[in-house]
Structures are given as C-alpha cells and as structure tokens.
Image 1 (spheres, rainbow, N blue to C red):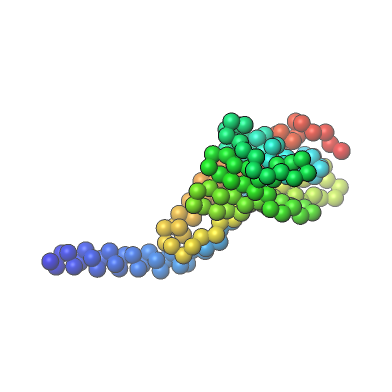
Image 2: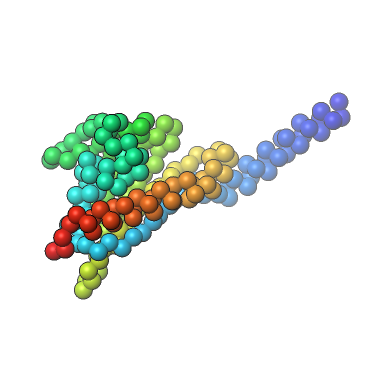
Length: 174
C-alpha cells in the first residue's frame, strides 16, 4: 500500500513539475528561413501567389505533383486555396512586399508567410519564409514545439533552395 501511494504521489508531483516547466515555453513559436535569389521581385511573385506554381518547389506538393492536388478556390486566374495529402492551404493576404497563408493539417493549424526584401543597387532579392504555430497551454504541445525546427526547418531550407534554383533557371533578369 505504501508503494502504491508513493507511485501515485510521484506521478502527480512529476506531472505538476512538467506542467510548471511547460509554462515557461512560449505558446507562439516562429520558424524562419531566409535565402538570397539572384533575380527581381517580379519573378518571385508568380511562384508564391499562384499555388499551381508551388509544384515547382513547395514540400508535399512537389513530391505528390498533380495526383493529389485539388483546387478549392481561385481568383484572377490563379489558385488561392488548395488541398493535397490531407492538408488545406489558403492564401489569405498579399501585401506590397509579402504574402500570408493559413495551413490546416489534421489537428494542427499554422500560419505561414513570405517577405520579399529588395536592396537598392543590388542584383538579388532576399526571400524570408516563416511558419507560425499557436499552441495551447498543454504540456505535451509545448514540449513538442521544441522539435519543430528539426521537423520543419530542413524542409523549408530545401524548398527555398528548390525555389531559388527554379527561379534562377526559368526567369531572366529585368
């Protein structure tokens, strides 16, 4: 009986300690990757704001190609909402120098965005891609966020490299 009580109190104490530690982990997490592309901004926009072109570089869409790609919404001749491999992505807002999208993958909701940074007197553009995660207070969500960089970071870097190679090979400088 003493051992059973010790086990129960140990589990409760450990759960409380883990919950308290998780409260120090932020609920909003951002992963950001940046790449320099030897082009002008006008050559980057068509790849970002029309999801039909994402098959050239975006993870998941590039791998599954058109077989699982479903267009859910389009405007002005470009696809703005799509579904593939149980993922729904919707372009939400285009700013002068950036684009924002929402992603639904099962139970996880993320926001992602791109910012285009141009420099005067320069022949390259800096493209920043970021993923934003909004977590609840649950300890397992907070601790799992410590692995987001390993899960998503490599895919983002590879996709940006693929985008750079595609743009530099398929567009001319203006």
